[in-house]
Length: 310
Image 1 (cartoon, rainbow, N blue to C red):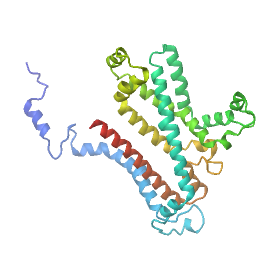
Image 2: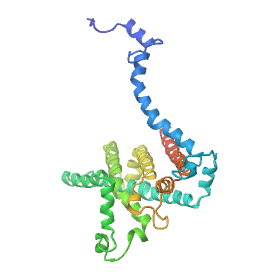
Image 3: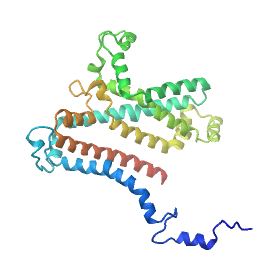
Image 4: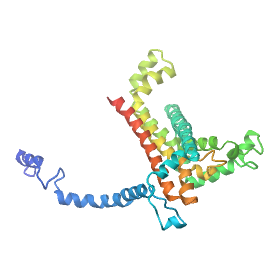
């Protein structure tokens, strides 16, 4: 017996064919546009317009103060050429790449997977305790964490020097890059751990059991069974944490890019040029170059993902 409230085949076919004023949801073009318009206005106001404004001021000599703050001149690509010739810009790019490679691609990836793999068969209370501690480092505000690390690494009364019996060692002066790398590993590993924990649950237990019965060692099981099953998750995680780390401003709270620009990542360089020095045009041009580097990294990872799916 047919339910009188169920549309017949003819009605379904009519909706499926659609028309100039229909859509899948059946709202009609004007109603659907009314729902989408507020979101489009917000995107235009807070994303499209700032991006276009950034591109424009990157082509000018705009500054915060002085004559060029009111009498702005169009300089074309001069700011971009200046950035590419600037040794401080090149230094910040190199420092940022080292920072991303050491703390994200290697540090967070390896530590996050190690925690996820080792916690699979751990007691429930142990797993809960470890996950809570790792998550705590992730959810604490950056300013609070930075103050804790500054106190821990203090050259006179810091707990790190007391534990290592190295009184007077100034970590943030003598090893600034290592400090921000370890800091970012400690603070950002939680995301990788959670993602890899979820990914490991998708590995078929039968595959692991087969590898065990075949006499595979732990490293062999990881190489032949686990990693091939998780390749997409690994690439996705690496893409996300690389971009987040590349744009991270938190190292400024620890070292301010010092000493002698040895920990000056690109976000810190842009802040100093655009805010501290007031060179808005130059800072905007350098930020566009930073965006292009981000785009290259994203396209590289996406190409690897596409190669996997194909």
